[in-house]
Image 1 (tube, rainbow, N blue to C red):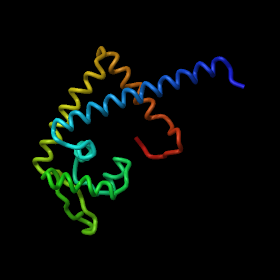
Image 2 (cartoon, one colour):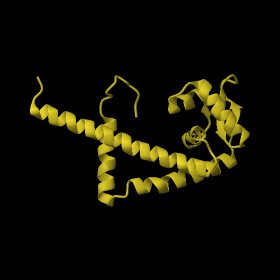
Image 3 (cartoon, helix red, strand yellow):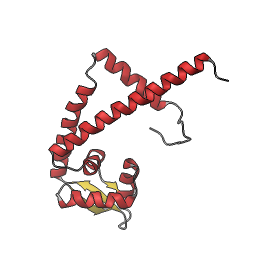
Image 4 (cartoon, rainbow, N blue to C red):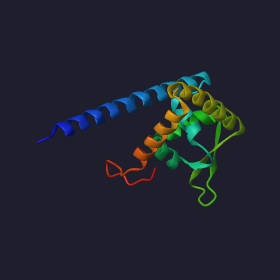
Length: 153
């Protein structure tokens, strides 16, 4: 049997979950708009912002939570645009690393700058509130995984 305190906590958790999803949706929509301004489909834009150095296709798939076969098509599109190249991995020529070209690095910085400017509108709070929210979200993410996932954040 649940107590009134449990019901109150459950309601707060429900509200928190809904708010986090809504904020995430706004951030995603703004990121997609920034990508569209640069003539990039959202999936290609995600690869660009997640590519900080040479990375195997498998690693990109893990970062994007998708199948490696999906990443192949995304990387093909980025390669056609001259934003990335594929290079053999130093230790295993069967593994291909995706590497940003100079044009790709420039486009990534444009995307990051534009999406950051848009994100500032979502988090238009006083500085102390921004820091407090950041700290609370960091605590949530550093807590024990809820689904048995043992990956580190």
